[in-house]
Image (cartoon, rainbow, N blue to C red):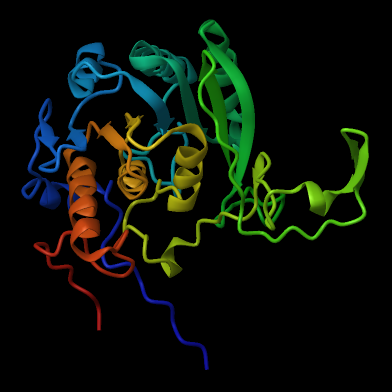
Length: 322
């Protein structure tokens, strides 16, 4: 007998009708910033294309690591909303130029910039190629890697290959700190020999870990959120916590400043909190700023990183069909 999979406790957070109900319970309005009572983080309702807003959230601090997750200019679930929508590609690139420039203005002399992006295979793979060309305008930012993450969801299975990847572009300013990390995948390769300092050594001898080092294809991280504690019901642009933790571990030190101009479900903030980094983050929508604050408060109170099947906004009763 098949057991039906539970449904998420709430509809999509970018659904305009549901969003209007949540707005009543949001602590922040446009232009406002929530100050962490422990003094570690700042969360705002601000606009990534506003230089003044970006300067306001930074409070004079320089950023060591940016992890940006902007809108992909792709509709999600064939649903065009104000938060997850598609615009003219020229308009999208103009928007991107502004927020990248604002990021660069806040980056420390030696710092990292990671950018999540998608490619719409139905529309000439926009906006990925246009965005990559745009990034050549910023001479202080040097391309370092092009990482792909396996996405559990996909489309195109009937008359095309299934689209199950998200792209992560990695740029660096100056010569920033980088620490090699390892996956959870056991190292099993034997019989690969190399001469090191005149001595022939086996691959296993040279390794400092019994697990393999991640490359630029992250197959060990998937977005099966509905089965995970970190799931944020209704947040369709959520990123796996493990992927953000990997970026933070490799590209920052404890106490460093991490920033994310597109907070959405607050994953960057939670990863920074777990790994003892400071974080400034914001979203132009008060709903996602409130969600980010609540996620931090929940983590500190319970140790839980998300809500899975629960409702992040219990003030709103969701009617369910019997």
